[in-house]
Length: 262
Length: 262
DNA sequence: CGAATCTTTGAACTGAGTCAATTAAAGTGG
DNA sequence: CCACTTTAATTGACTCAGTTCAAAGATTCG
Image (cartoon, rainbow over all chains, first blue to last red):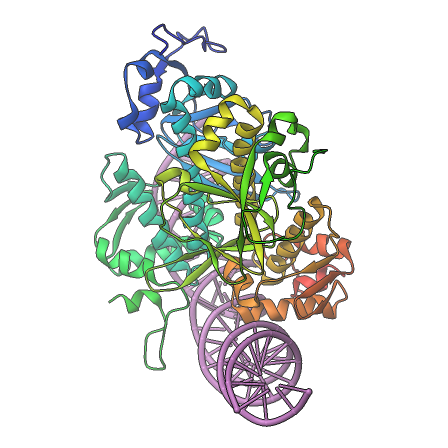
């Protein structure tokens, strides 16, 4: 294996002290700690700092880097002809940004930081070549693509839920699970995106998100304080989230999904 | 094109006994004709015949093959705890089936043939190793993953459309575009899935799909005869499909999306 | 402190879900 | 090949959840 430092990658940000991270770091963030070894320690990537509200990649821009979120979070957005901004999802530590670029050589969506964030810059061609010698890196790419697709499956399932309360419940649960997978709380969530962004992602009106959160709070399932959400009763949340089709209500049953979980 | 008779497969299923196709065929189906060369001609894959209604892969089954649809079509389905069957999408010629398996080594969704179909069996590990020597095959994998993600973006955009008529319009348009990319009509579509399956995929009730199709037909945008749909007025369909949020209706404007397109 | 944005809540309207009934198509088996 | 069954598709009527419009708090930020 390559025993010498392969980090030719310096590329674009030589000034600014050029913060770096190793492939091992990336593997850890991506949940592939098992694949870390000495070789992956020697591969270095530059870290790119991204201020809140600014773009990591632009829709339509030429694709030559993948990015692995190191800290902070991003929203993935697509703008249609009419100017409507569709939020496709949110990326947190360990998520790869820009994978759809694989198809056409252009990013299919923009990525905008929701807060002060940073991401490892993975020059794609280089990553592929490295992957031939370091299976860990090849696996990283495959894994990330697969994970992203699984994610999309979940999202589609989420969006096909009849009730908006169920959608919001599923959104919270997924978000919590992802946080937990990173070693964070899983109960105390910081939704650093706006209600409108959540709404766009879920395919509902932003007022509806607000109402659903309020309803969940009223019923003691969660506690909401602005963008901080605490999941008080994970079981109730899970019961709710399970309801797929319109609530199996009977004539004498309550019509709101929330009341069913009681 | 491959001038030698490796492609026994073109459209028919000759006999049982191990039908094959070349990597070149797969590349052609996937829209990567540019990458075909003598080397890819020499790589052969077995073709698997799949009768209508039977499964190509099962959800949760161990992942060791990718499949490239050679003929016919498949639905991708995920079954939730309650037994609800969510249709995630439809695969036609050139689409890779099983990509989500990359993440966890298990298929994330089942694939069921909608009609008599066949698919090339691509042993994953082998494909990756071949990819190291034949860039075309590596590219195939990347391209397919990227394309699948782009597709999902479209689907999410589709599902966030307010009106069900718009959803159906977008569905038809996407389907038509895919058919066209394969060299087929783009106007005359055969929807070989049930209304219920379309409905599940779009996240609406199956009656709603039926009504939307009827409405589109009434307005002369399409012509429906059972599962055969002809797009009579592509422009009108496109206008409709563009409406993202609830129709920008004014007090004196018609409330149905369809009437706006008039 | 104001300006701007985000969030919440209310009220009215309506589009889509549900239930139900009819028609059409596709199998099944004698 | 034709009755018979079963499943798919269409259409109608009714109801309610969610959108839209509007307006009042809350939060952030210059």
